[in-house]
Length: 278
Image (cartoon, rainbow, N blue to C red; front, top):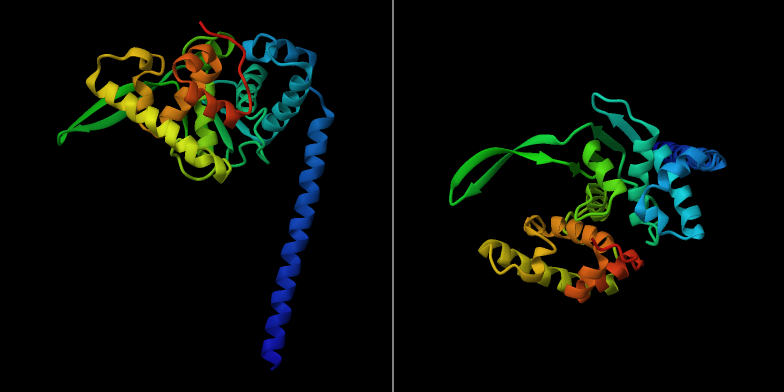
């Protein structure tokens, strides 16, 4: 009898200790966040942000909101330069694009699984092994960025070029779209969303992905699918990342040629992009 009483007492003690630790951690976390937000975005930082086309499209309320998100992102993620120094500009630009995607999305946290951003100075060369009919080939390909759940890898020369100019590709939008996809634990081209919206999302994106895959395989009669491009046919995750780029950078063209796809992205991001077509 005494054994069970002792065991129960020990378990209660452990439970109370864990609760106390959680309570202390919650207070520490809250105080840390308050301290972060006490220091507003500086004048110099705002000048950097003003050079970003998407930032200039935001109204004052949206700018105030994204300033807070940027501060939280910068102060809760680890930025590591690979053979280079990480500058304030790098942190600001990367944080802006990460937070821009979530500006109107009702997520509780800002990429809670993401811990580290690795920054390379130039485009990376990665090795790739591919198979075709049982024949394996090895080769190198250029890598502007990569996402792996808790880590995002960015080539700064590509990211900086994309950040300040609107064109057909944006590595930052692309990689953080992957991070959104990672949030539900499955890299499948479907980010977290209410179950009521899942069926329509899956139907529309799967339909367009399959059509693009068929066109890519034939490599002719591209028509409207030229807007999206062959890389999006790699898999559903890449399709989502690429169409996210098109949604923000070429909204008029995407809406014209793929109205249902545009509608799904508009509903998910809870945002209607300004006309930025190139």
